[in-house]
Image (tube, rainbow, N blue to C red; front, side, top):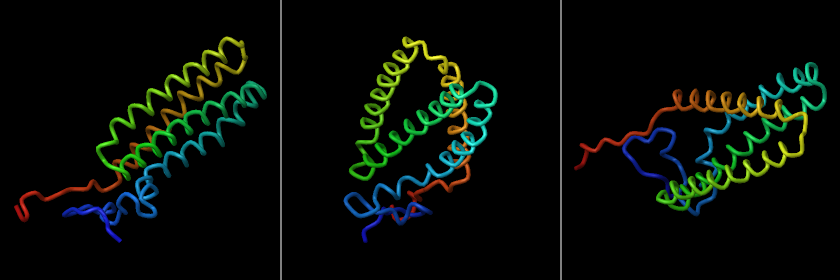
Length: 156
């Protein structure tokens, strides 16, 4: 199996290259901790919202957390796909994915607001909380994961 090459790539040394089985999956280990953190948030926040704001509040909180998780998963998978195909695609695929998600989210949120759904404040609060939880978990993962390095002085 051909793998990514480098002087000291740590956990990235065995990443399959584009077209090989597992090439995308190998680029997604950063998703585990944020997914677990958002699941923990849901376990705590949905029952709390149900108790404090009723079923509509619980649905709003669950929906807000789900929107954030789906949004970040779409980004993660699209960027991993781009990296597995060709690393030069990462920026353009990431930007197109982000812009598309923001437009769709804006349209959906506008429609929900226009409908006058009473769970909208709960949805909004859950989106904010889930973004903070996801970002904190992702940052924690990033700070604890070895950073790949290349010793350019060796062999040059």
